[in-house]
Image (tube, rainbow, N blue to C red):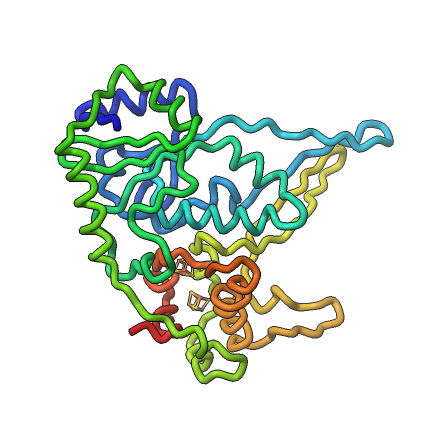
Length: 322
Ligand code: SF4
Ligand code: SF4
């Protein structure tokens, strides 16, 4: 394993920026404009990392009208490098991958994923609403990362997990040294300490039945959609064409199953007109139907929907977490 002394962090990012669009975590999201030292201290941004591979507003392609012909202009993607992405957010992208690669591969998602390198960072200090260990991951889950890092006192310990990851570490090799045995041991200790800090719940998904009383909590829901926008696994979208005189573009934008218009049909009929129906759909999709389809929950335990729901509707409570 390799180690970077934190005193060299600025140079590390500078070197990486010569080759990649380097994004790092901020308090709110992932950005190319970040504070190097602070980034290591942030547990996770308010917004999840899904935006890198599935942007909130994504121009899919532009088109021009040339005479009577429509000419499509495809975009070229450059390589993004995501620094310090957290285990639950990588898990979210792994879940999205299952959806976007099922049956027909979504080329826009696949291109972005192929053009992104993930340098993940273990969580040292999980928050009150984190519950990743209740949905089968840990604060040191690595699947889907190219490089896995742990912050250990004055250094960051790196483990390359893929060929892309090896190339990234090669690029900054001049700044790295071999990690000491003590540092490697300390990293393992930090992982286990963090895992023990995460609250573990015994969820009871059998209570998620169609006519369960648990859905009555929807009486206070504002249908604001925050829970779906912040969720790393929610993936509903709409597609619109913006047309000008001789040009236009096709745009994909996030949608939310918590909005009443989401299921409104042209006839005026709406199969999920009520908040109860929408909340039930969101939770049953994540914990019942997704599990039936993919044998896992569409939830990473990031706790964002619990932390940021303006009326404190708690997924943990709905699932009977004790
Ligand atoms: S964040 Fe809370 S209030 Fe807003 S739609 Fe979700 S459950 Fe309802
Ligand atoms: S805790 Fe909430 S926001 Fe986070 S993955 Fe699960 S459902 Fe989505």
